[in-house]
Length: 413
Image 1 (cartoon, rainbow, N blue to C red):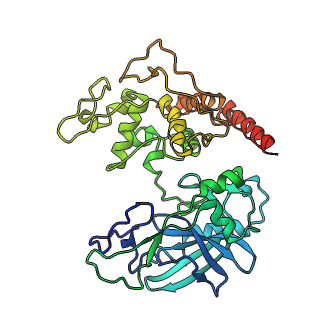
Image 2: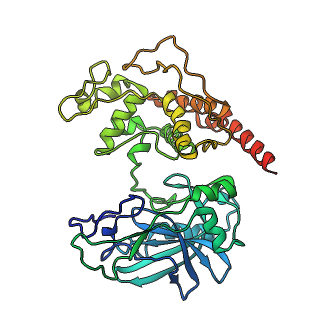
Image 3: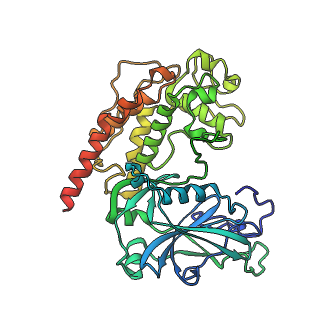
């Protein structure tokens, strides 16, 4: 949210799985409880889907159309008749353009305003989909015939965590009596996934005749953007690689914590090694973290040493991290086996550990093999050396994924 809380009134929620209760204040979030009704009782709240920086998103029943929908309630401060995301969604919904991409964008079903104790809030209604990454959903098959009990049997009963003031006083109407943990959408995905993505979050979208004032998130920024060298259309290839990794893993390829730009630059070197001198010499702060040859400096004082983390290991960790969640089930990329995947470390860290003759570890199946091959050709410092976009889109990785998805559908039929 744009104005952060300075004085905390409420105790943190123990699970850490909900929004911050202190975001419920004037110009902040709108308090919602399970069973609440909106727009003359047309929409009834069934469960929570997710929460974001500026909104909460709820699973609701549209009593008029007899279908389940996602109801997004935007914080009052961000709500505006000129809301860019709403404008884009309205234009997309009203467009008569026949384009294949229409099947992969969020469709606006309804929009309206509500007045609440924290201000005036924009609300809009879309189809239900599973949050795969921050800006990408996974499309789901229709489940409108399900009863509420069917829903709860699949995604679990709402887990309600009481809101409590730090001073022990009573809470007022600006804050809900409890916060709700997001439901287990992965269970719904397992039963209803269509294996098709959907692009969401058009808040920073712009039209072709506009001069965009858009900054690429640091975790998706290409090296030439961060290091300040010439920007070319090949930045799209880098961002494509970041997006593909996030779709497959559910988290970002490059990590950041306290200082987004600096953290991503350090992690980029941890992944790819020392960049070309045209980039390396422009980064004055490099001396705080790396030796002249790109090797990480030892930890001193409060500074934490950079740990080499090659791209090949990041690809393997997609399976390792997902196994912790799914146990004996397969990973997010259909068809990934649960065999042991650790092996010899790759020696492709130029400037951190010199290239060796050790072969990369054996990947568990075709999807991971092809994913690593594709990313290794996209995540390259020099823009001119990145795989051209047409060849990237025709890479065997996409064939391997399609083949595995077809096999899964056949086995379930």
